[in-house]
Length: 226
Ligand SMILES: [Zn+2]
Image (cartoon, rainbow, N blue to C red; front, top):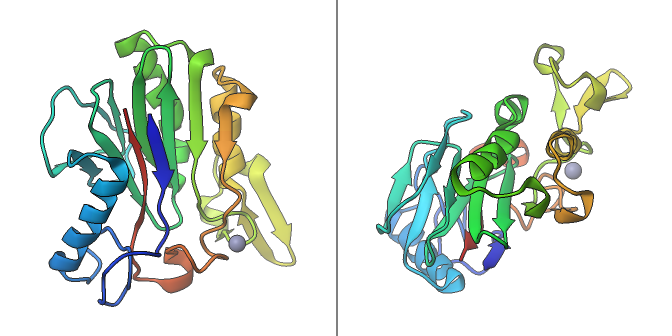
């Protein structure tokens, strides 16, 4: 198993988002994005990259065959097929990778505020259990760079369900969405020692794309492949 998170460095794009932007919809030329995806391919060790057209849903798809340049309208993907790189693109949302070494199953999820509220990570784990007989205690979870509570200011109207994770500083409200995500997956039995969380806040660290910091911006990627 090979898994990693990219940042904005070491790409070729000369467009508005520079360097290793992997998203087609944000204004960089498609040629540059294609070259960046080739760089990603090399790092992943396969040309079978699967991307998601992420729609802030709790939809999760299982991939059962190889095909190149596939894009699925979903926020979670699972496979047990070797040589398929599952890719999740983000710029502040949480990229989550999953691995069951015993059953040799991998997965990737995109968890924004709506995804976390809908417990997409838990639903994905339940699908790994149902479709591949994974045991929750065997599943390792890698939570990649995302916006943290230092920067994630929210308005009152989006705090429903997150009451325990709000931090009040002066008149402002900040949300610790990563902790909420961790607590949810622990609640269904993922072991604490099997959860690895990046300490990077994408909004603080300019090596990463951040929608909150930059508005229209590129996307970096979480990738996992068997
Ligand atoms: Zn920050």
